[in-house]
Image (cartoon, rainbow, N blue to C red; front, top):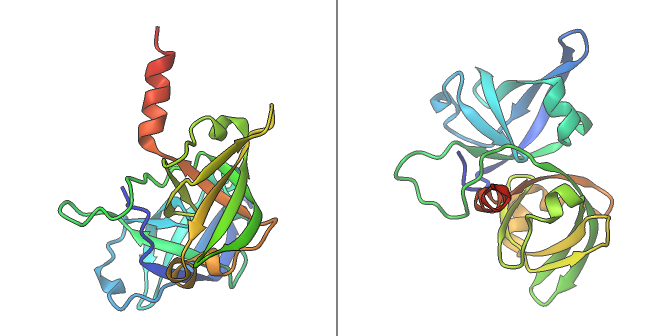
Amino acid sequence: MFTGIVTGLGTIRELDAIGGGHDMRAVIATPWQDNAAIAIGASICCSGVCLTAIEVGADSFAVNVSSETLSRTTLGAWRVGTRVNLERALKVGDELGGHIVAGHVDGVGRVVSADAEHGSTRWRFAVPDNIARFIAVKGSVAVDGVSLTVNEVNDIQGAGAIFGVNIIPHTAAVTSFGFLKPGDTVNIEIDTLARYVARLREAP
């Protein structure tokens, strides 16, 4: 489990096709000074996707990404040099600064706009219907692994919704929001609480 509070901005150093070309191996360079503390098999949230460290170097770690994950997230668009939001797994007793994030992406959204709004930037994302129904004003959402508060939701009849969040300069400086632009795609994870509330409502 994670909190959606990014602790490092990594960079894709190597990409290799594996599994007959269906899967991918990635080496991600990190800014952390304590990579040696990462255990083989540790879970690391990479731009919103929970991945397993299979190798650890002095300033990097390697992961394998399955074809299933590539088909349901933005990771298939990774290239050498791509910046990646990183968060190591939550420990019992750690401060929960964001919200509970599982690293299980529910779908892919698209950046619609980014407009200056006083001291922050209002980012708007378009999401499909299967995600839209779980997003509510003042609820939580993870965008590329960043825990955010939803500030607006505009439903599009039969075509999902556009929701907005505000990003302060600090968040833009320490996450991939500093590199995003309209038209880019992002990994979206809905709030776990919203998922279970919806499931209970559907129960007979």
